[in-house]
Amino acid sequence: MTSSVAHRVAMSVILYSVCSSSLVLVNKLILHHLPYPSLVITVQLFAALLFIVIASSLGKIERDPIKWAFVKPYLIYTFAFSLGVYCNMRSLSVSNVETVIVFRALAPLLVSVLDALFLGREWPSCRSWFALLLIAFGAYGYAMTDEKFQTMGMNAYLWPFCYLCVISFEMAYGKRIVSSVKLVTLTGPVLYTNMLGWPPMLVFAGMGGEYSRFWNNLWIDDNRFVEPVAWVLLCVGCVVGTAIGYSSWWCRGQVSATSFTLIGVINKCLTVLVNTLIWDQHAVPIGIASLSLCLVGGALYRQAPMRGALAAAKNVGVQSTEKTDSTETDEEMVPHSSSDNEEAVPLVRRTV
Image (cartoon, rainbow, N blue to C red; front, top):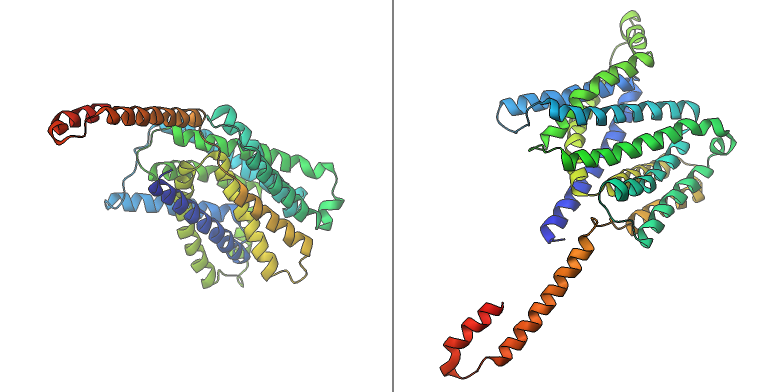
């Protein structure tokens, strides 16, 4: 990997991580004032679409045209994303956050298998398998510090397991369409996912009773109103939401599906760790150590190369070695006298 490629990968990971952590914090603050999660996400999706339309109309950005050939694969991805959101909501309704974190931490293990079977990656090395298992073990250790996790029955694990399967498919399929669907601009994936993502969110809002609660709280009750800080936070959330749309697809295009999934897990564990250290005055040391173990696993992980890349690199190395040996042998046969220099130079050039 050249320095320019490494720099691009690092920048995409950092930008995605910052946007992801920021959006979690901002959305928490928004939901404190506006407890309508599906409607808030819908507003953020529309804000990203509005940005794309205005910026492209002014000639500030370029975007791909809307074609059915592009809509179809992104429709499948959007369905998987929406189904993952639904499974996550049902998981939180029957279990707790700790349970969801454990199953979310298992996703890189499953995605690494999909990476090798369908996306042309080599199987992870022993070091990477150890790192992935370390992350899963750390997440499990953190969850075990919560009493509710220990007392729940097997029924609490059905929806988290469905969430694990759906999000693993979503991560692998997202990488596949980045590689196979030939969109010219980075705006293309953001446009299609936001354009196709808002109808399911409106359905989830209806299923969650958000319309009636919004009407009762903000229109029927004369004493209720939206505080100005809520509008400010909502605008900030729209900006960060648009940024994470671009940064996530950029990062997804730079790394493997497993690495992208792993980055999401590490971001979540890091966010939980920071929240635990700052807000939870009764944080259990074992829980903090377990989350730190997840971060260690993330640092140990190494992305698997594309299948055949190692063999190709070895062949190039062998050919380069043979070429160098041949050049050195021919150079020994070249006379070093000044009178033969004109004949010697072409001979060396032919062997390079």
